[in-house]
Structures are given as structure tokens and as C-alpha cells.
Amino acid sequence: MKVAYLVSRFPKLSETFIVDEILALERRGVGIELFSLVRQRERVVHPEAHELARRCHVAAPLSPWLWLAQLAWLTRAQQEFRQALESSPEDWDAKFNYELAGRLAAQLRTAPKREPSTILKLLRPQKESRPDARRIG
Image 1 (cartoon, rainbow, N blue to C red):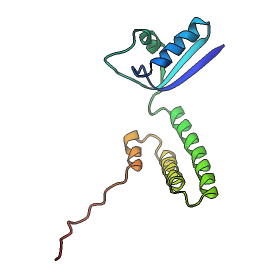
Image 2 (tube, rainbow, N blue to C red; image 1 turned 90 degrees about the vertical axis):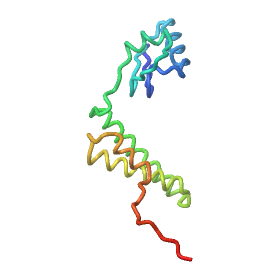
Image 3 (cartoon, helix red, strand yellow; image 1 turned 180 degrees about the vertical axis):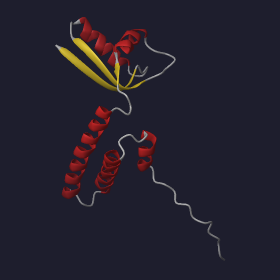
Image 4 (tube, rainbow, N blue to C red; image 1 turned 90 degrees about the horizontal axis):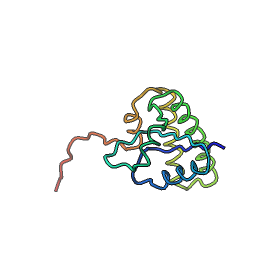
């Protein structure tokens, strides 16, 4: 049997349970493949995590496969948020999530090689530049 672990960052000191779990499964003869979206750079790392980190497959942040996976997830998420919105139209969280998923998916479709930091600006409201208002009275 083979098991794949997908983690956001590896090796991460705060996730000792993953290292312990992987090592326990390997002692039982289970084959492990470890995938990480980001290689974590920390000063302190568990001694057991060093070998796992060498075997860890790290995704390229702008790879076409990762882009397609994110677009597919956002498309599914947008459909699910739309269904939630239809069942409860007064739910402001559902409205926000639906709008956000739509914006992110549109950005990925139009500019797949855009830097993640520019896409993340959609998550933060942009301040409009307004002239200073003067108080009267």
C-alpha cells in the first residue's frame, strides 16, 4: 500500500504529528510519498524530518498543473457558494465567498502566470485615494 501526504509547508516544526505519523506508517511497511506546496525554511527542524524533507516533492509555485488545480478548485467552490447563496440569499458570508471565488477564478483564467501577491490583492479591499475632507463648523 502507498499513501500520499499533501501539506502546505514542509518541514514545519509545529507539525510534529505528521512526521510521527509518517514514520509510524513506514515502520509498518506503508510506502509514503510526501508533497508540499512550499518548502519551509526554518532554523530548527526535527531530526527525523531531515530525511523526509529530502524525499519531499515540492510544487513549483507557478507551475501549470498547480494553476489548473487551483482553477478547478475555485470553479467548484464558486458553484458550491452559488448553491449556498440560492438556498440562503440573505447570508452575507455566502455572498462574499461567491464573489471572491469568482474574482479569483477570473484572474486565474485571464492571467495564469501572474504573481500570487498581485492576485492576493483581490482579497484585501483597496483604499480609494480621496482628497482630504475639510471640517466645516
